[in-house]
Image 1 (cartoon, rainbow, N blue to C red):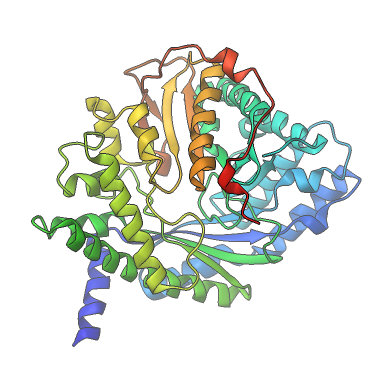
Image 2 (image 1 turned 90 degrees about the vertical axis):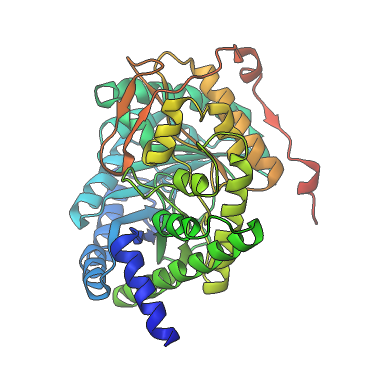
Length: 452
């Protein structure tokens, strides 16, 4: 009887509450593709990706059909390209990005991540070359995603990198202004980036990972929202239990699909990221979950507390369901990808400052936020620095994916399309922080980083 009830609940989650597998992401190591000749290195990269990921999309679609659960995205993450391309003497790495894009198209995936650099305590020549190549690379490719890790709790924050990334984001926005600066939607700046994140745009294949691996990202905001809405009078302790049990069921579904796809591809199963990743569709919103707890609008008083409860309960439920939970796992708050967040921003309830407070307790940080195209690079760098400080001091992953929409100002709307959605251009504090940002150097790691 209990088994039948669980089966019926899962069917309802899939058919009525928008439960899906948001992504299966194959991680591929490219360390053995390094070569002193850039052209040879790129050929090795293309050959390895197309060989290992040749069956990723067909097998994922077959499993999706067999189990009756949608796998929305099929993606690839690779070793940070700065670690691979550094063996050659190329003056820029745009051609490496084009190679990744070509390989992604050949195997039919939605995105490929790993045009990345890890610079929390300084730069190599290859790191700087990659970072300077980001604007052109994202403007000239379709599927490539880029990320730069500029800090960590163990090493502190590279403020030179913070300053540079503000300029890189501005240049990327300018080069893709005919698409509402879409290139910036494929660029993430991290503190404490993780090596096994299956979600774009920040996914890359860490150097401690195997040669190839399959990660899964599960999403179920609609399922959690409906579960919360069924208990309008529950206490917070009871509500946490409801969310934990729901996250448990979502995780079990993801574990089944992920391990099956990995087995058929003959690669190890890596991690299951159970982040609540919203979409622009009605009913698939993290913001609506928070409002179901009793908030009039997301962003109002109580929002950060509600998000903390949600994030914690999701993690606890997932860890009960699988020994392979990893990645980021919690709740994402990307404004453009969440119809509830979009409405709250348009009403003025959700501001950039409130979003920053919410990032202290969510899975990542300031995500998919459209800001005025006239925003100075130094202000973007200041926002990055604030988020990195939150991540460094609290020993958590934080990230910034800001989109300065060239030609648009406060109150206008940016359109990105598909899962990236659309977003109102939000107000940015106009106070000048350029003198602070331009100091450069290294912000030391916090005292609690010394644990040996």
